[in-house]
Image (tube, rainbow over all chains, first blue to last red; front, side, top):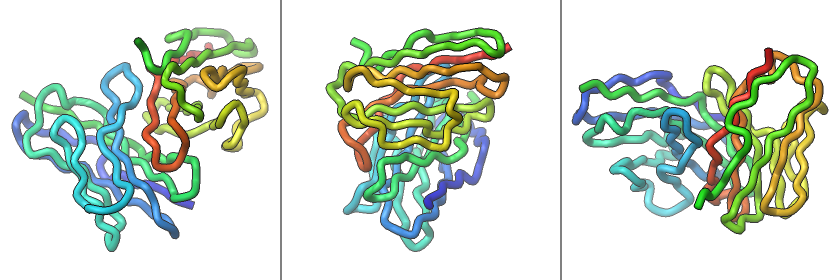
Amino acid sequence: AQSVTQLDSQVPVFEEAPVELRCNYSSSVSVYLFWYVQYPNQGLQLLLKYLSGSTLVKGINGFEAEFNKSQTSFHLRKPSVHISDTAEYFCAVNQQGAQKLVFGQGTRLTINP
Amino acid sequence: DTAVSQTPKYLVTQMGNDKSIKCEQNLGHDTMYWYKQDSKKFLKIMFSYNNKELIINETVPNRFSPKSPDKAHLNLHINSLELGDSAVYFCASSPGGGFDTQYFGPGTRLTVL
């Protein structure tokens, strides 16, 4: 069975600073990897996903993530954050051939002016 | 032009009551899901339907019964509500499964008193 660990429950950063949100997964087979964002009082929306090919994936709003198979990680990065990036970020994994997304515990990103 | 809509947005009810949450998607997707998000923001799949057929049932109590009258609708009926059912319930849809992006509704906040 697959599982996802988001190593930080909260990450406070200053506006325009870079940020990295960490995600590690475990699975015995190949997986698809996702990052979703949840703005306050809203549903989740996709930031980016890794299916295959290039390990560096670019998403919306200037976010990118790098798939590292040897370290079973899929960390999310942004070089310069804005107040509007304040949200909960979820890493998720879907085992290839399965129909089920398994989510991490979420990381609350707080941007301070 | 809401892609995935849920009603109601808020639901406050007494223990022991029966309630329903409705979900509709206008994206033409074949697969729909119900997720439960607890007070710690942990998100877990409950059910998944593909073209009106149940494909995932994640050991959810029998008090929860999903119903899909057609592939654009997936409703959730809950019998004999308990305090522990208090959560935010999200509906989602995707073209298929696996690597497809899931599109989430705005959520229904259920409070059981």
